[in-house]
Amino acid sequence: MKPVGPIPSGFETIDGELAIGGRTASALVAKAGRTPLFVYSRALIDARVAQLRAALPQRVGLNYAVKANPHPLVIAHMASQVDGFDIASSGELALCVAAGIDPRRISFAGPGKRDEELEAAIAAGVTLNCESEGEGARALAISQRIGVRPRIAIRVNPSFVMTGSGMKMGGGAKPFGVDAERVPDLARKLIAEGAEWRGLHIFTGSQTLSADAIIEGQANVLALAAQLTKAIGHECPKLNMGGGLGTPYFPGDTPVDLPRVGAALAEQVAQLPAALADTELCMEMGRYLVGEAGVYLTRIIDRKVSHGVTYLVTDGGLHHQLAASGNFGTVVRRNYPSAIATRYGEEATEEVNIVGCLCTPLDRLADNAMMPRADVGDLVAVFCAGAYGASASPSAFLGHGPAAELLV
Image (cartoon, rainbow, N blue to C red; front, top):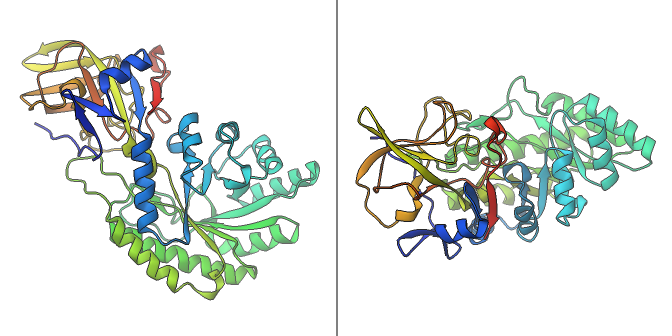
């Protein structure tokens, strides 16, 4: 038997079924008209934002990383919850503009911005997180051609990383950002040539569950930002400190000690170097804001036994939940939090493999997991599906197409 990951708090049981936003899984599927289905909870998103606001210093704002979940209704809902938005493409810019987001609340990161993307962002008034000297030169040339002053920050590639992070975004040679020692010269050049200087973006790692690692990383970011600001010789209007707070997906994972992180950050902010005295501070988060608020629902379409092993075959799979299948950066496959949604209140009585509908042995949602007895027609729930599910899975694979999505 392999245990499943920890189911996030905040979900209900109604009439023996998993309920999200006060509605049972069956009712939500009926509303959507089909499975597979992603369901995102407004209440759980709002609760997470409230937890962060309560724990973090008031001076530290929140930015939403749109790449985590770019569903239009999620973006529109986040407009009242966060202070800014971070995008990684002109497609995400279009989604934000369509949702009514003021472009001046948006910053644009990514190492490969095309000229047309730079032009759209500059014309709209978006802050460019510049990732190289070449990108800076292209942005200046475009701004001169279209007659719009560009708003530019620099994404820094620091020499340090956030220890324990699932994905390291700094330290050593990286495609992301400008090496720290080259930042002052580039910043002075951008300012001298007329750019509106917007500050620094220092993102060192993501998916960290260790409070110690996050606290150390934030201290390093603040120290580096102060050092660079002095070297540049101009104030730093805004510092995007990145995020890094992780989500517990697997057995044995424990949530980040958010109050401890917030208390340590409050001490650091109270002792900021003079160079950052007037700097606007923000943390950028995507997964941490929306990940635990989402559930993936898929229907069992076959129950079969092979060599004594029971398989529950669903109409979903890795084409919607690549990470849950173990094929999105993990070395050893472990079970995501999962359950039989239509038998949520029942005791686990059998060991099963829950698999998807694709013609590949990689299409697995749960291995050797203890579940209540489930049959054809029952619904399976995969939790922690609010981030990098619909947006990061190969929905076109084998022609099955994307899942439905609901915000409730």
